[in-house]
Structure formats: C-alpha cells, structure tokens
Amino acid sequence: MFIGHFAPAFAARAVSSDAPRLGTLFVAAQLVDWAFFLLAILGIEHYRIEPGFTVMKPFFFYDYPWTHSLLGSFVWATLFGLVVGRVTRSSLAGIIGACVVLSHWVLDFVSHGPDLTLGGGPDRFGLGLWDHPILAMGIELAITLGAFWIYVRRTRGPVVPPLLLLAALLIFQAVDWFAPAPAEVTPMQSFAALIAFGILTLLAAFVGNTRWHKRETGLAVATTPR
Image (tube, rainbow, N blue to C red; front, side, top):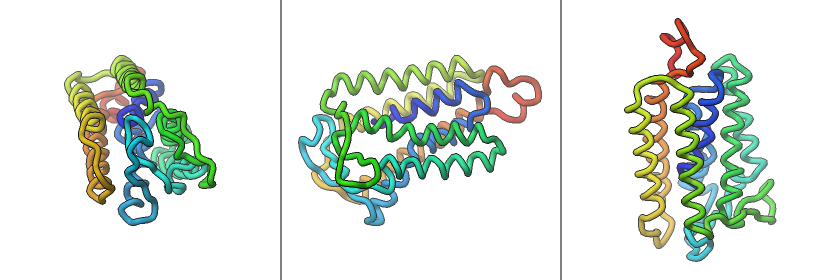
C-alpha cells in the first residue's frame, strides 16, 4: 500500500481530539518506510526487482528486519510513542501515535507477498493482496477516502486545504500504480519515495493547522488547531 497507510492517520485524528496533529500522524503512518528507504540508501536494508513476485509490484523486499519485521515495527512504534508522549505531555497521544506506526505492518501484511518476518527470521509472511490488482486498488481507495471523509466530518475548518491534500494523495497513488516499473533498484527510487513522503507530510501539517476537532471550542480552537 501507499496512500492506504495514511488512512489510520486520518482516522486517529478524527476519532480523538487528544490525538497528535495530522502532520505528526502522517509521519507515524510511514515511519518505518522513512527508516527503510534511509537504510536502503545506506546499504543496511535491501530490496530487488523480481518481476512477478506479485502481480502489481515487482519489488522483493528480501532484507528489511530492522524496519519491517513485526518486532522491528513494534520497536519503532514504541520509540515514536514515547517521543510523542513526552513532547505533548499526553500518554494517550503517545499511544495513538504508536498504534498508527504499528498499523503500517498490519497493512503491509495484507498487501505484500511473503516478504515480512516476525523478528527477522527465515519465515516470511504476506497475504498477497497485490496479486489481485482490482481488489487491491478498490480497498486502498476505499479505506483512504473513507478515513478522509470521517476526518473532514469530525473537524472544522476551510475545505480547500484538505481537498488539496486529497488531490496530492491521489496523484502520487496514480504514479505509484501506473508508472512503468523500474528495471533495477537505484538510490534515486529511495530518494523519490522520501520526497513524496515529505511533500505529503508537509501538506498534512498545513491541513492540520487549518482545522480543529469539533469538540475543541473557545480558547482551545484559537490556540491549538489540529
């Protein structure tokens, strides 16, 4: 998944006014991919092009235990939650942020072929939704648009900024789906992914600063837009 990973970010912010800001939740949603692509650039984690590994994606992520094992994801989630909890002085915000980080592994488990591990061991897991393109596309759009709709309904603010964010999400997703598959792995692919994450996170932070939860009123609305 790509934009589907941001669905938990929208949903978390919509459900609770105590959740971290939307930009922070966008970081949480793709934190392990931020880490993976940085480690791939450094040669610490690895992937390769393997045509046919899944119908939709030719990427075989054969070595990424630090970021995409269940244990590794749990560690990243715990660290992120501790930082968010400390900065916001809210244990609930930290827990919500950690859950959004961990949701990444769950969604990857559903979509990936068997390349995920529990703790970096030889056994690999993945339900392979990417082998069913129409179903995969439909599910990814449904969870993203559904979570976005809930977020907009549960928050107040101008409608244009979130629509711009949604447009950017859909454009990046279209590129991810329909751009020609690369012939080989290069560092530029990792840089491109990081740039995409950065653009979407900045847009999410902007949107979060123009909207607030409907349960926030008075001084809270004026001083802590989310």
